[in-house]
Length: 157
Image 1 (cartoon, rainbow, N blue to C red):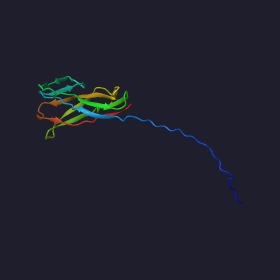
Image 2: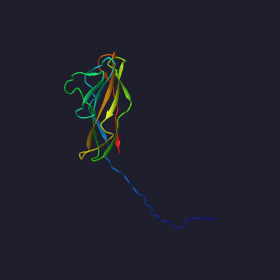
Image 3: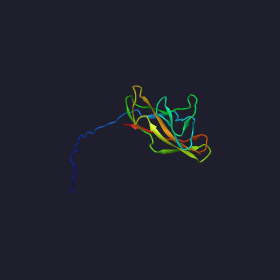
Image 4: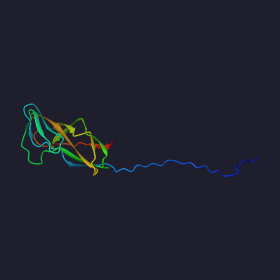
């Protein structure tokens, strides 16, 4: 005995198709975080830069600010580009970074501060945010330049 289908049956079936076209986010650094010149006192001192376009620089503890020429003191500045009006989340590390002495192993500590944890991009699809921080220094540390790096992250909200 043989069984089979006697005709072809057409059964239409539909499926939804979706795509979201977006402008990807990009980020660029426009200025480094620079504390200028400072002197440690006899004990522990701190130098702070506020996260702003024209940052205020202050000293506390036993640190002393020394004159720093124009453009030497700056908060880090980052430009984010993407879709106009996009809401962007900003992540700045919240742990202590070591900044190492040039050519040596001694270090000072840096704690970062962001200007905001979110940003709405303007009509042109861009916006800026700043990163400042506080350096901890102490008596007897090696004199000279201390440097390091840090990462920031941005993502769509």
